[in-house]
Amino acid sequence: RYVRQLQRLQLLFSPTAADARGARQFVEEAAQDFARQHPDVVLYVSPHSGPGPAPVLRAEYLNGTVRDELVASKTSEEIVQLATKLANQSGLDIIRIRKPFHTDNPSVQGQWHPLTNKPSILTVQGPRLQPQ
Amino acid sequence: MVVLSAARWVRSRLSDRFWRVQEVLKYARHFRGRKNRCYKLAVRSIRRAFVKSTKARREKKRFLRALWITRIEAASLEHGLKYPAFISNLVKSQVELNRKVLADLAIYEPKTFKSLAALAQRRRQEGFLAALGDGKEPEGIFSRIVHHH
Image 1 (cartoon, rainbow over the protein chains, first blue to last red):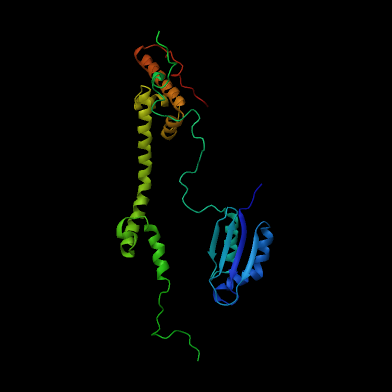
Image 2: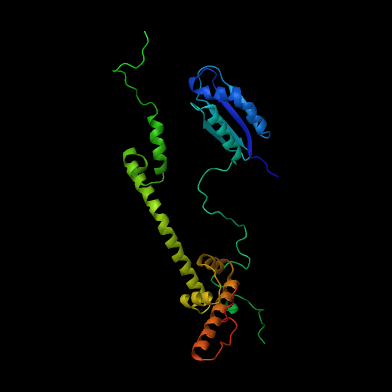
């Protein structure tokens, strides 16, 4: 069963700042539809009064990663697209994956060491024979 | 009085120069010397580093193939076969394993690699018998090519 990795989305914006216009339109029009379409994500809308930091959309994931996306001077549709993109992501950090595969047990027959193909007289210690 | 354009002597000044410089310098933090701190030197070094990393993607494929071949050669010499004999006889026995997989088998599955080397050796002997013995049909079973349609 699919478990959505996005825990909560927090929209921090100021109700008077000019660059938060898209955020305010998003809250008025599209926030309810977005919340209904994604029932397992909690959407918090926190307006802070007065001049404050730039409007930001903060996403918290189940593995603890917090991702902030600036929404200053963005239209309501762009914010909806951003929010859906964050909702479909997992919380893993976005870096280059070195290998697309991983095993905990790479060797079934025993990894090669310099004595694998040598005669066993070199490694095996037989029973210590008593001198007769 | 409505002013539609700013006066000519008012010029806008950069306020986020620090962040613009930082987002370039973050790619140079692991360099040696002043080019990990000074913007002017870092810009040139970063551009060269990116160009080199783009071009090296083609070299990486050649380098890794050479590494695999070295490893397969070492492993097959342990079993008494040289690399060209090993690879050619494997291909003639219709074993289409690539060098990456063969190198991984040689490291992590030595018994499998030993059996592959034995297969190649047997096919080699059958090939010699077929060429020198001049029999109508090679005696061995590994020389007979199976055709799937």
